[in-house]
Amino acid sequence: MQLKPIDQQVVVMVGASSGIGRDAALALGERGAQVVVAARSQDGLASLVEQIKQMGGEAIAVVADVAEFDQVKAIADTAITTFGRIDTWVHCAAAGMVAPFETVTIEEFRRVIDVTLMGQIYGAKVALPHLKQAGGGSLIAISSMEGRRALPLQSAYSTAKHGLEGFLESLRVELEHEGYAINVTSIKPAVINTPFYNHARSKIGVKPSGIPPYYDARLVTEAILYTAEHPVRDFIVGDVGRLLDWSQRLSPGLVDFALRYIGFNGQRTDDLKSPQAPDGLFETMPGYDQVEGDFGHLTIPSVSDWLVKLLPGR
Image (cartoon, rainbow, N blue to C red; front, top):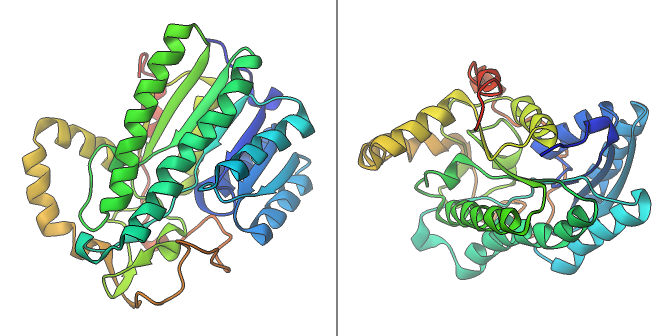
């Protein structure tokens, strides 16, 4: 399967106003791609497009809530109207909630599923006809290591990411059977230092955290840039992610044991946060249209990400 160089691509980046999506959109624009950026935050998208244009890149923004199919379709329609085709569709948008399952309402659980799983499905539904028409391309889903191993206190998010992995596996085989040269990639980051935990709804009394250590968003951006040009099935980001994958394959019970001891306190900070505090679950949350989160002091390098790019048949 031959994919175009990034500087010859039209790339759609969904979930682009902050975090991984924002960093990747900037890198794509800097590398010469024509970029369509989408998210709920109009202000975040406006500043992102301005940054890309200041670097000499081309970008256009679409305000969209990925839980609404018609709004996701509008992203694809704008890409076609503006640039004439879609070469790569990258879907980053997700909603988070950290809470014991018994305290999660059905409406909250459904919202996480609607954004984090159904948004990805809507993206594939609108992108694939254009990728087929273009004769190939990439569908890149930003999943999570929670699609490989669920965490306590994140039942809805883990459910969505497990569902996403099943969807991508089914879709990949269908496209191969039909003979389409479309690369379907699942990027599975470990814990990344983005504003995700600022946006997440919390019912544990404090601002939530990922279980440290954290990794820099640039590692995920580099995985996106790589898989946009090289067909890859799965790409784990972060040494700890690869260790978790190995441990889960070796002994799920051992991981259960470890998470009973680190999976609860590891997701807590010392910053109080009530369930009524502002979050990004149902509405946009101003003030966090940025790449980095609050955990730079817990961020470490990953030494294995560059190595896997040298291995065939990932």
